[in-house]
Length: 218
Image 1 (cartoon, rainbow, N blue to C red):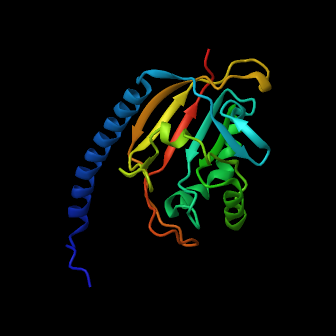
Image 2 (image 1 turned 90 degrees about the vertical axis):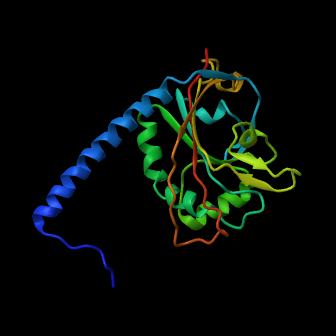
């Protein structure tokens, strides 16, 4: 039985209006934070990355699939995991519909994880998903963008608890096969979201998600 205070309708309305002012202030502060994220500098990304996808081996540029922007979701699924991160899985339940809307705005979408491709595909089928999911197994991609780390002895992977959203410059306008993965990066940090997914058990790997927004470079 809760001992939460019960008041009159007038008391509730007065308290609610006071809270509303604080909510508006939070919204204004959030807008200012978003502006500061957009103003962060871009950085050239010139390292070559290779991913395993359902269509075969792909470079970072190939993941654009002809679009001018690419959003990458760092899905927490390590090589030794038996299931995906519960929070990532809960969020990913909405990716199928989101990917369609993004494509209509010239934005490609893919999730990237360090687990081998076969393990990712098995889990995707189990969860009923269809969005693109690439494996960075054997690549330094996740480490280079500070969403995966090792312990001091380098023997065990751990995940960053800081949300990161980055904007890259898209690949050049050259034909797909000859595009360079050179890109521009803008780091944008946010609070992330935590959640619980009832259909899976993954041993408590509940961390903050990571997004990359990529755009072609010049």
